[in-house]
Length: 167
Image (cartoon, helix red, strand yellow):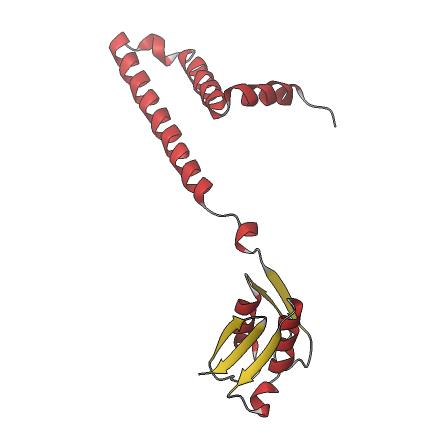
């Protein structure tokens, strides 16, 4: 697709002048059109000056507000940065124990459960995708997708082994 005349103008203007080029262009365009209005021929020079100052202040306030909002937005992390990490899809009829072992195997670790009954380890999880920053966090989130209540537990990792301890 060929560049339009506007794109041919704005690409170099932005490369050279940045945001200031846009501000100057908009400011000039607004004042240029404003000065051609018939109302100014009917006003005294003092009134024209006051209106110009008010307009200038309003343009400055809008520009300054936009600049502040841009700086605030610039400091916020983007969604992609927030969601970095891992994604784990829980298949149908997957038990709590199976999901924990599958997650642990993803990073080459083993699992040790402490204080859980076979019934609790066999609780089925809902089919869902879990997104987490780490495998440890994903294991912590598994209780939130269980069909029935899983007792509270603590997850820790030491020397390639996840310890899932009932609290």
